[in-house]
Length: 88
Image (cartoon, rainbow, N blue to C red; front, side, top):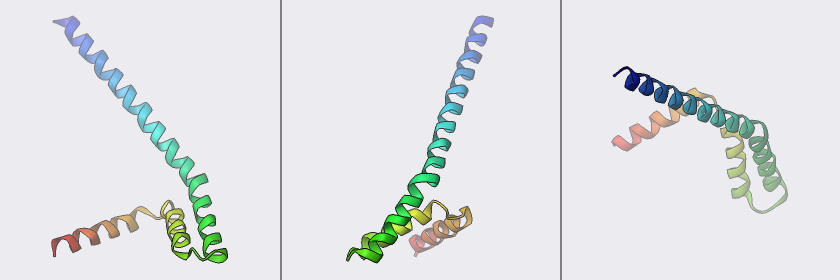
């Protein structure tokens, strides 16, 4: 009985370690996106709007670049607005 409990605890600890590694990997990817991909998308969008007739694509890229920097409360407001519209 004791060996079963020890094994269960070891399995639980291994799962917790794997979850922590996965969470850190996701946080690292999010940081890379905010530092590299978002500014590139924003600047590419500005270039599309200013230099090409593809204004729609440029505005989309600007929005994608700015979305990485939107505060959490803005996302919450937009999410709540969508839920209210879905109720109607």
